[in-house]
Length: 114
Length: 108
Image (tube, rainbow over all chains, first blue to last red; front, side, top):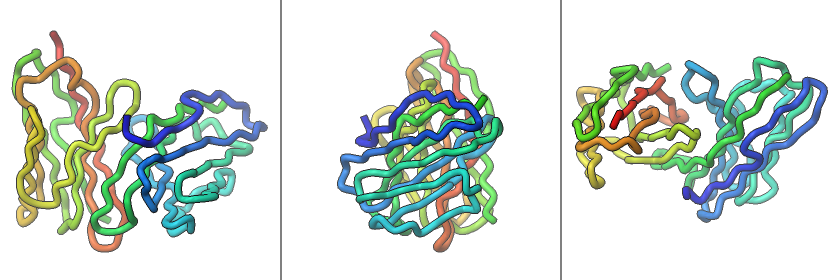
């Protein structure tokens, strides 16, 4: 148990659906992250929030929309996704965003877009 | 950007054997972490080790920052050690950058 909880564990959605991924951390951390893991590729950073403010957006398509209502919760809202968006989506948190950041990951949401 | 290479890409071990995983990086780093991803996708932080040596049970890690590499040692491997091991590094004020991993299979 890493202290970072993601739901759902698995999600299948059509290209016209709207769904949301949820992440909650119980570690008292100030920074939260969304990563995408596709087959045969390194983890890709999507979004970073520090103290509930977005500090990084790595050129992610607008069909992915993050939300961080407080330092313990992070959402990823999905709409009109494409089949190539199928991947494992991982949430992580760290005490702070900085040189010494040490990441703690959730179990991920395995997303399939049909 | 920084290049992170992990070797070997795949490794098969008999239970009880020892192994060394390597992470080479192309620039000076101020943060280096090793992670284990189990077959169910869970990533566990094993070490935060931008330099020096650390040990945690059967696992130990050494980073030689001046020579731009880090090693992860697994001794007396167990089937539960199976999964993918990732190295992640950070340079300057950039974000952590992950390598492509080493897939370890430990057979009984």
